[in-house]
Image (cartoon, rainbow, N blue to C red; front, side):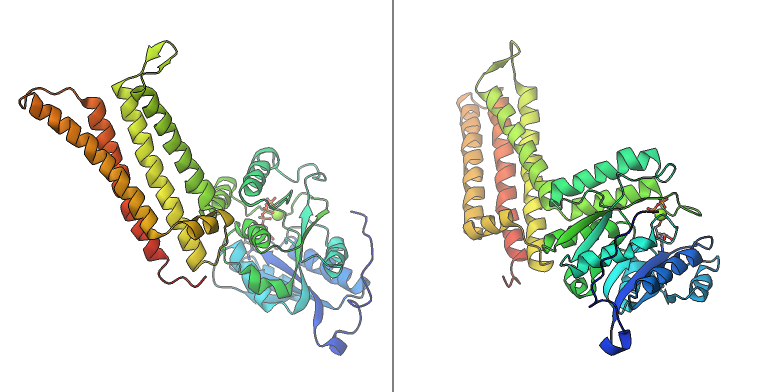
Length: 394
Ligand SMILES: Nc1nc2c(ncn2[C@@H]2O[C@H](COP(=O)(O)OP(=O)(O)OP(=O)(O)O)[C@@H](O)[C@H]2O)c(=O)[nH]1
Ligand SMILES: [Mg+2]
């Protein structure tokens, strides 16, 4: 068991009735954990008592059929039943029922030491708004499968930090603590295991003071509820759909730029690897420019939706919308359409000059088509962006 430092300030301990509120709610999500739930609840209650912390243990259940809720209640927990399935749904119900000023979260499988509760609470009392455990340096033998320890966790935590810069080392750690007063601002909604990612991302987005606490991770009792690939994908999907910059803008700009370079290489007759590049490369270049523009436009629309309807803030998008108006987009689209039309006209004139005979202006034809497609895309995407902003307030 981990060494536990006891430095709970006097303000936290004391008579709950005198303060009219509880100091700590330990919230435990539980799905068929009959082998361990009673011991978890017992350990949590004992820790609260030993440290004279006025608190409660809330067990959030949604669908156990092995008698876990009854065992939890008998061990002294307040059991909350949530009809909607999933780890996140259970936590949301548990949070709604919690009465403590500070909420400590931990699993029902004995993987976490409930004796750590006072350490988590102490960090909150000292000013942190969220405390997240960090298991990675203290994983006991058999506690975490190789795939999770060396692939799933590092890859997903790494992606999360690239996209959202949270600085959290173990973003899926199930032992955490949070001040209850910040929950409305966190505005959590995820139903499944991706709830763990949502909490960290939202906390970073609203600039909560997040602290990390090294803790030990023990082998679980009972059967795991985690499906590696399904839940891993749910986490990744969650990260992507909350970051239009990484899902659309960066890939779209990269594709478009690659298309532009390839097309310029062909049109400029630049030799690479001793070869001159022609029609087929130009078709590839045109294709990349077109899809790049399309993906970029989707990214701008996704940003607009996030900003106007989800209250998201993105400095890059804010700078964009401060600088560019609908008319700028229409002018840009119009100019690209005009350029495409001029090149198409040149091809047409040459055809007329040849007496409507055989024509070999494929390069110009491809460029004209690409420019017309891109211009039309920019033109109408600008209107769509404008429509998304019709109801904006800020
Ligand atoms: N109420 C409820 N609890 C759940 C649900 N899914 C998982 N849990 C609980 O959430 C906690 C975490 O689930 P685990 O199966 O331990 O997942 P994990 O810790 O990521 O994976 P392991 O390392 O295998 O333990 C446990 O206490 C589960 O009982 C659910 O759908 N509803
Ligand atoms: Mg577990």
